[in-house]
Image (tube, rainbow, N blue to C red; front, side):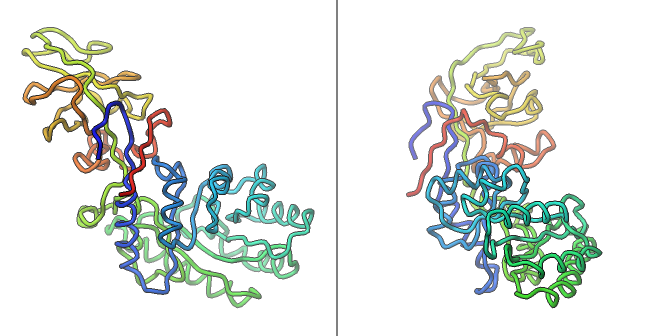
Length: 369
């Protein structure tokens, strides 16, 4: 791969393919696979990722909001797309672009059904979400009778899937809670399915669910972070490949004398002479201030260079006293070393946040060979 000449986010679609095949290998052959491409495909490039997944044969895609699905449709993506957080203001765009809404409350159901009647739709596909313990979105078991009465007395919309979302599937210390969620979902579907005219797909597992609770894979599974190279546990991370690598370059090198300070608020004061490199990436690019003052490191010529001082809007400074390097040399902010998970952990956050936080001003470079 070419050396970076500026700050770029390199997106490796072969790594995406590897991760997809690895996750698929843990499933029954007939289990369908939904790839989550919300938030610019976890900060990468939603169009490039969706197109690649489409070629690989993914059964469904999911986005958070209608505008994300519209962008994929306008780029020519034809795979069914589930919109996870449907809002009434976007119903018209959703229907025009053949997107499929997550219906999660009686109010949203009635509002969407009203629009479906106005547009004289016929069995438009919808998905029902039930709350089994995450307590974010979803119907509850007590609403099943009222829900099915509405659904069975119309022909404008049709339920194509029923799903829920696990809250702590990555934490085996919470296995009892997760098993309770699985049991709750099973009980809900046992009651609901006989009341529906058509049997929809069932799906519950996220990436960590695929890894830890594959017995409950139902008809389909959903994976987001796993596709991008992270399994929420080190043994699985070792089997996956990071899709996104944030690269930059050394803009300038400074020799800082004992007693001198570096950056805003003089957050770093040298106790001895140090050599620093200034890099053209900062909190406007997604490297927040919480990573400053030694909380994270980058890699230069295979060696760790900790961030010193406060992160600036457009720049960070790193300590290269022990590294042989020069202006123009390539720098790995995260990728294989350090991984996004390792980089994020220094600031006590997670890979999801650093990946999805990379600014759209950072050039995306898609690699597929």
